[in-house]
Image 1 (tube, rainbow, N blue to C red):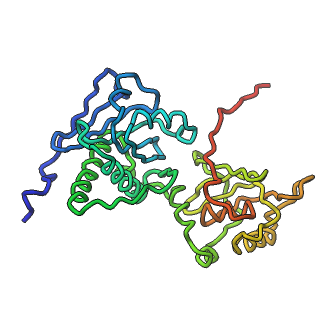
Image 2 (tube, rainbow, N blue to C red):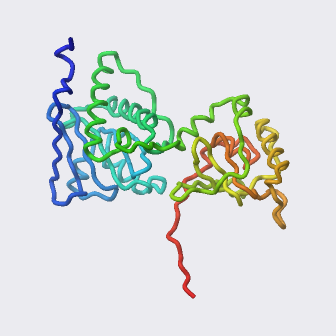
Length: 317
């Protein structure tokens, strides 16, 4: 027998989508009158004064999204944070914003948004429908047991309202979730040397698939390009690899350099002595190892930066 205090989702739910202005793809309010939560959705673009005033001093958890990637954040002032993200080239991937807040500003502090940021990040990573972009891991929150129960109910409501708003990061009818994400690869950087030694480095893998997001590394004049592929990160053919290795580098960097030389995967560059050229694409187990082998140093995954492609130039004869 179920408790009468539990939400009666078996009886169905009702979501209200309100468009205060004309236009299908513009600003939408998404609410359920039985919930204390509100979701609003709008294009990732400068907002008018009316919406800016509404978002000012609004504690919220928010999602920047496109069809393949999301960024989950939290803030005490959504209007200010939106302006910061619009000016940030790293957030230019987004075309839609989903803002999760307390209905009628019922959140008076950031504990709710912080809990939502942590939970929604983990839920999106587990679902695997999109790539989750992170500047850093969300902070861990430790609410009291009674408050956690309330927050978990909010998370459940949030997932449903976000789906109704058009966000497919947590639930989707797509039966082919994304195979991997940059964040998942970055999390594997905690593996110790023994685990990494036992993993495979495949030499001569295929080039970047169509539509794959590419990343670029620039370190002390060393240039490389790569992309996620399955559970690996591929450094593309043509990338540069530093010829020398710092004494502080992990032992795996030396063994990987030796393997590349033995496979004739490194070629000299005319007129340059401090770097070599990859002649084939190479798949690494983690972003960290890829960066360290390329740089010959104790480098980090953060050196890989998302590559923004300019529009192609067509030259007609």
